[in-house]
Image 1 (tube, helix red, strand yellow):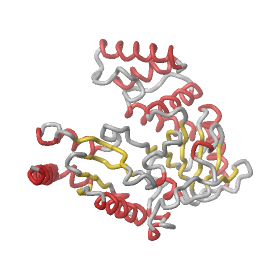
Image 2 (cartoon, one colour; image 1 turned 90 degrees about the horizontal axis):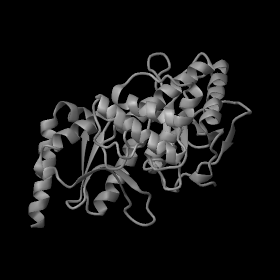
Image 3 (cartoon, one colour; image 1 turned 60 degrees about the vertical axis):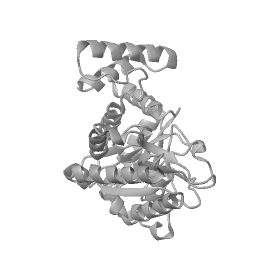
Image 4 (cartoon, rainbow, N blue to C red; image 1 turned 90 degrees about the vertical axis):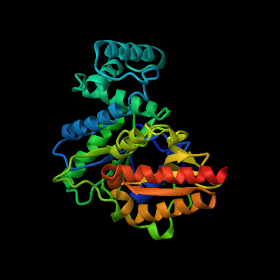
Length: 343
């Protein structure tokens, strides 16, 4: 079985594993893996439409992850002329020493502050976005894990494969298909380096638990990992909780999206929010956490953390967004109790 580092870049392959098992194995991102973003494919009429969809979603991810890919731009906010000039200068300086395409990086930095579409060619954007997203997670390479929807017809499968080949070749990204087979001779199936115990037994085979976006009424989307130390930019609930906690003196010492390994042979665990000294973990659960595979994996993670002395406080993201006062009060009460117990 290959390692994650051995999976091909610059071509399209199909993974021989359940998509949910792959997703759980990639959270947190293994040390030997490229950066991985997940594209939830929808039915497209043409290769051009698919390429436009993928680029649009990768672009949204890159903008959301700013300034993780532009060192020195931390704290630069707002679309003033001074700020725009500053991030463009940083982008051109970074391009000069890293090999990024300067005009692309400078335009992306500007749009991170001002918004608006890109004026560059799709081929330029594909190559640039792949490098930027890899940089955001401190990796040299990027793979796009494509979640293939069920029920694609022959024409739609052809569009999907051809569009994925375009992204792999133009962007120099790995494109890993997961889901139902496409019955296409151009796409070979390869072994997937899953850990020996990625899921509890009850979760294995629960592929239907994580719904894919419906092709008729939902646009394609890209999911991507968080950057350690920050709320996930794609999570409104994480960002809202951080805003609420930042005003509380007792909330000091918190760290977002940290990786924790219970033992040297255990699979690492990524936690949403951590107070290390108080051994307190806070998890914010979206609707996907109610699915059998994710639910079972969460319970396994909680047990491992509790055996190591951590308390795990779980809140639905809907509660965070609608009843923030209760969430903050309960977190604060737990932390104060722990601190008093420690003397």
